[in-house]
Image (cartoon, rainbow, N blue to C red; front, side, top):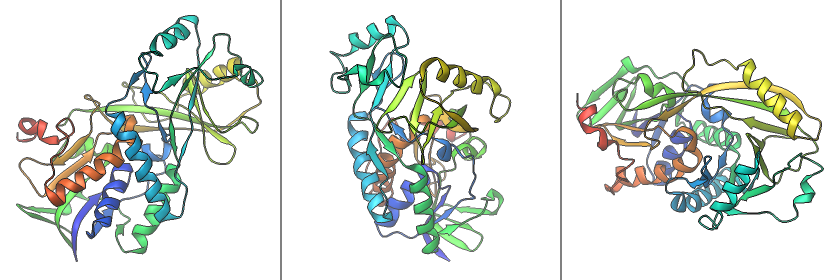
Amino acid sequence: MQVDYIIVGQGLCGTFLSWNLSKAGKKVLVIDQSRPNSSTKLASGVINPVTGRRMVRTWEIEKLLPFAWEAYTQLGKELGKDLIRQCNILDFHPTPQMELAFRERLPEEGEYLQVPENLDQWRSYFDFPFGIGEINPCLLIDLNAMMNGWRKQLAATGALLEDHFQLEELVVEPHRVSYRNWESEKIIFCDGTDGFENPYFHLLPYARNKGEAIFASIPDLPRNHIYKQGINLVPWQDDLWWIGSTYEWNFTDLLPTQAFREKVDQQLKHWLKLPYTIVDHQASERPANMERRPFVGLHPLHPAIGVFNGMGTKGCSLSPYFGHQFTEYLLHQTPLHPLADVQRFKKILSR
């Protein structure tokens, strides 16, 4: 069975790469075994243009934000679903120093930062002695609807193999590959955390990062914003809220921790005035990297093998843009962004 591209993994990277290639008329085979606790399924779906305690712009956000809006809107129309909406962040300052730092950043980042009007309307929901800042615009993606919808479409067109990829069954030739009964021009690994052990790309500077999230019912909290004070409250499905997240670089397992649950519980009691019920607590590992830049491109020694991975916590904003750019590179040799092109690690990967 002949296809143009084999794609390993149907996370954010695999979804956008397979969608873009399919739109271009290419025949793809996506190999993916569904995992309930994959990093994509536990991600909040937030695209935030200003991040960190210093409130600086995220890398290339001027390009990524409008591109993401268009890509999620277009894919949503194809799936018959609303996948994206604007949902700004209300940042409740925990200390007077943080409030001052926010106001000092206002003149420099006025495009994305502002002070919301009528702060008193939030006093019936939260305790906040030091004011609120707003990050505007922020986008919120319905990742579950997108992933499930595109997976059904792949399955309906015979483009999905629901199985764990077995590397020992891959045969690599200079300009083509074969896997079981399929032959293809190229195989692209969008394999998330499995990339840490991928023999073709394991030398890339991946960084293991664990994240935890709690899901809580807060029926009376308005769902038109994301709320932040040490933790983030993000509208989820029905009346549930996604609460998180942690960024652990040193960990021994991927189990949820009692310490994080207690931290969230204490913060909600201190900050939130509404009743809430914690209904779930999950953890997963992210495909992060030391550079905080994605890995996109073809292997320097094996041109039939590619990688699209390493998005870390920015997958919702990076995947649409670089999924399109990688497709243009594969089909028309259009140059990749030099800080994303995996050829920057040519010496390492050529060992």
